[in-house]
Length: 465
Image 1 (cartoon, helix red, strand yellow):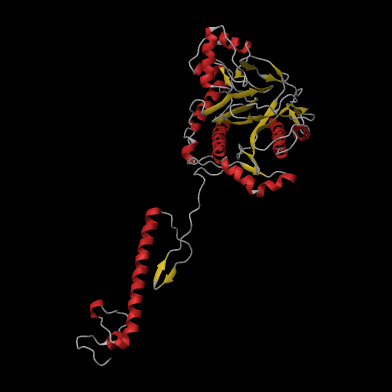
Image 2: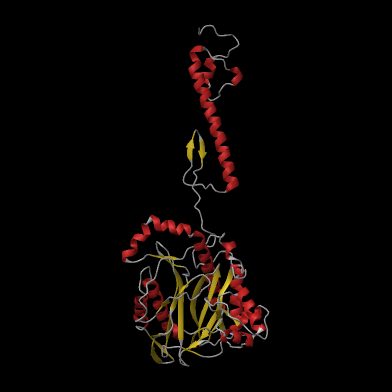
């Protein structure tokens, strides 16, 4: 049969001599004996064409999506080089690690963190539970409980990121000679912008505390205050953020003189000890005992005189609940406290105060902090102005703490008598400044922690403290 080729067919010997030049499709009509070899050549040609097509498509996808990266040496296949692909790692956000400062943030901070982090915020520092609770880390049931709370976790991490961004700026910016009222208003305006404040849904959790020297807590300037920062001041900046009532409470101490460093170090170490000792099923009194031991092992020399660092024994950390800054449990900073235990799912503000004075605070000075009692029912009011002011407080602050400057900002004037009437009726609770003896110095550090089902998360941890 192989001898019956038509004269129009090309000579197969020519094709064998020039293997680099494949014949055209119209010129192929092979003899029966050469059919398997010709079919193999057709299959090879089709495979080469398909390979070339896939290569072109891959190159186009790499150029348009930007996801393909060149890695290693190119691999030669059929004389062509193909690029290796690497899987693109999923990023939590563009901002970087907690406390590092989001890329693209301004100074002073004004860009909302939701923009910088694509609404996925970095978790805080993770610490393991001790001893009998180590099993929680590998429990699938506990992991599932955390997956159910994913949105809430993201909200509190957003609050924590706002706190980190704002305090980083304030720590670097504040200088002696500045008015404290200007510093507070700058800080609070930054919080409102970064958290995209929207009434009770998101915003400032309580007034900015900027207590100086012997004043331990609950002091913020009222309208018209002219207090100026001095180079020898020890200032406690204590401010909070909230989204849907989930409050972040965190504080640090700012000084401008190195002689206070041992005092700050003592308080910082005591706070870290309190965080380390905290956990599910831990007794609150045990935390206080550990804090006191660390704090009172330190001394500090100020103006040539040596002082023992004392815990402010009537100040405490506290549990936090939605729209409730003090949720009922107190974390002591000295031995002999309550034997109540911490529980899964709770939030705590772990804070310590170290003093060179008596280590005992009392109420003094003009009041600036106020808060509506969380459990107050209906109380009949006789003064119309008091009723109107209560409506303003309910709409703007609810059960969150506020100060006189916040009422000024809401447009209220001549409200002091109405505010006093609300306090006298037990609807609003005043929180005057808490002070140690005059001439002493008090320092404070504070973090908010979350007792997750599998681990402990220090939400407000940053690269500063």
